[in-house]
Length: 482
Image (cartoon, rainbow, N blue to C red):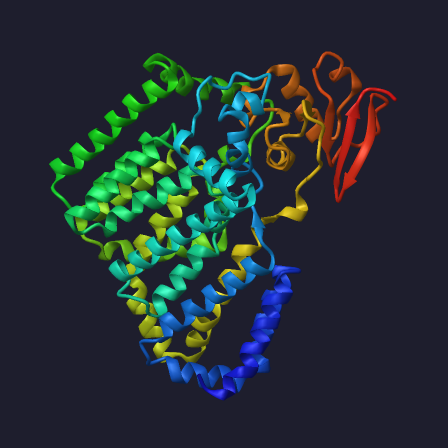
């Protein structure tokens, strides 16, 4: 590395540090650096624009900044992973975490939660949650780089642009959540990278593990269609995964009927919700994000370069996961757009070689992507960390507190409403929705078996609540008069 680049690298490091205060600050400083260091940017761009190292150089820089962010301000999820990790302390029974609900009597994520629980008991719940998030990111990056080599011609300037768009999109927020369906999606697309019989066998075994980890896995078994083997073999693998799932879940649920009944409850819970939830909001708000919109435009051109049969499969998968119109499938859809966009990467790379400004943009995009990825993540300091008496039953507003309280009080507290809002008994769900709107009344608490309330939006002080503690925006109340 030339000596002349050191001031620029120092500036980037300072900008990255200030981005921890606000990603917007980091973005502004990154853009300001162009007129501040025009000679250095131009020199670097001239050195790299015709070099095959521009792709690896840019990506490594972005990964370095990403790791820097991670270590300087450790991320924390804001929902489901916070209740998956401590479920071991409740005997892997979510009804013990969320009482007064119609949740199934069996565990919906057995292998996934047993792995997380084992790590949590051997080390700590924090180590377990960090390893899960890191594993999601590592797997996602590994598969994405493999796809870039397969469809984009390697690590060139074009693949840098596309991968930067991918990992600065809402996909980043999904990876930090570390949910089982995120791992299912990553596993599904890794099928495109399986070339040898042993990798196909390992892929199939991975599918069995995910099947035992997630009760709604069968939707992801269709990714077997992406394997580069005969159609008969793809069909047999899909059927095999499906049969294993039915056998395993019939055993885990205590009977086939119990499992089917639980799946059928999904529609009942949806109808019973008194308020919308984020996971079922429209997918179109994801497509309106600038990064995803750019990916979609590139995909519209790039997918024509993909072999016809494979293109048909990709479009069929896109249709399958778009029809439900739910944000929960955004991981799949962003990956599909990336795959269909990657074939134009060599053309983007050729354009960058002809225009020095485009080369500078390629150098900056991974840094911008790292900053934008962390703009979506939560942190421990923003979560309610109240230590509650053993046996407490806490009302929350179906927000971060719903999941954080069991994490910080593993095995000792219960929370309402349930992880699925529509599964909560109506009086508790009614109180939770009122609390989320800041309109909770004492009359709504009269017949509820609660000891505490945790909130941050209640508009007025209630005579039936006594303030116990405050942490940041969060307030802990004890139910009952002095």
